[in-house]
Length: 75
Image (cartoon, rainbow, N blue to C red; front, side, top):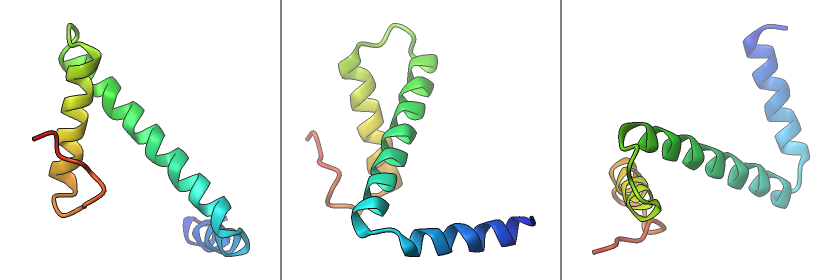
């Protein structure tokens, strides 16, 4: 199967899912990406507290999505 064929099959499967199923996948992917980012932050700042790690994660999210109202500012 080529990558294009795989992508088309994946899209077809998503279309067969309920909105709730697709949302659950999206939320799981978001949480997984946040964990990966946290691991990267811990690697750069090995002595950082949990609070600092979360602060740096939120900063990254704000930079990535500056107009996203869903990302609350700590200011």
